[in-house]
Structures are given as C-alpha cells and as structure tokens.
Image (cartoon, rainbow, N blue to C red; front, side, top):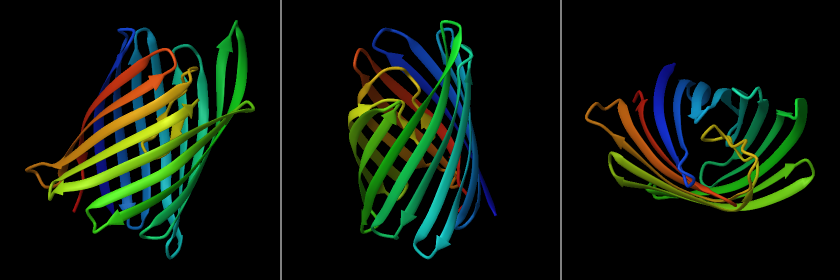
Length: 239
C-alpha cells in the first residue's frame, strides 16, 4: 500500500478583471492496480465561495479491462449545490480505449425558488503511446443539459522531454456547457457556454526523488469572456 498526498494552488485572471483563487488537496491510496482517492477544493471568486469534495476509485475487472468511478459534491455561498457521478471504463494497454459517462444534478436558487436540472456527459477517448515517450489522445465530448445538446472535440499530447521532465498539452474546441472533467476532477458549473480550452501542464521530479513539482496554464474561452488559470503544486510520489 502506498500513500500519495498532493496540494495545488490556482490563480484565475478573468478578462473582466475579476480574480479567483483555489486551493486543492488530494490523497491517493494505491495497491496496484487498485486506487482509492479523495479530494477537496476551496474556490474563491470576489464574494463567491465554493467547496468541492470528491471520492473515487479504480478497479480492474479482467485483464486489460478497468473501471473507475468518481463522486463529486459541492456547496456554494449562494446556497447552490450539486452532486455528480462519473464512471469510466478502460480497455487495453496500448492503445487504450475508454468511455466515460457523467450524470449531474444541480440545484440553484432563482427568484427565491429552488430549481433542479440534470446534465449527462459522454466522453469516448482513444490513447496511444509511442516508445514510452509520446502519448497522443483524441476524444469527443457530448453534453446534454435539459434536452439541449453540445459537442466538442479534444486532443492531448504528452511528452517525456527529459528523464525528470514531462510536458502535456491539451485542446478542447466546440461547445461545452456544464462540463465535467473526471480526470482532473474539475466541475464547470458556470451558466455560460464555453467555446474552447487550451492547456499546458509541466511536471518535474525535483532533487528530492519522491516529490514532483507541477505547474500549469489553462485558458478557457466563453462566449462573452475568457479566463486564464495558473497552477502550482507539489506531488508526493513513492517509487
């Protein structure tokens, strides 16, 4: 059994000059190939405050077939809340085919009346690794919110540039609404249509061999504004 904690701090700059700050903590218990993890995120934007909790696990079923499930729950200072269940099944070692499905129930206060709405999101993905150095992923997001459908394509590229340095880039283009990322544990519950997302993430194994320094930049573009997020974190990884 290995225990791997990690912590991240994220600052967001909005095109309307708004700032946001987020602190996230993760704890992973691993008994390969089984994993159990918990996460907590504290988000602050002007006078808006949100707490997000997540619990998930990965379980092998048969050789080459694995299943992962993640549950989310969040509360906000505006008395909105939501619950999400994300399941994903993986097949193969290389290439890896996966199919994810997320179901969310959101609750909002509108004119002193609490209203509920449902979100379904489906995400098939294909991943291939070349010579243990370069990983390419292609996928599709389909989101259905109260009968309205939205589509977006995804592409990811990961590279081991040096023995201790890995860089990952990602692009999402299309239409995203109430997007759920079951891998990065991100729930976008903003009431705005997102057009694209461009990301760059770097992981460096520091002089202390069990500690990784992680950093990232993400640019999200919505119909009426954009946001740049800057993340820095520490990851403990037992080898």
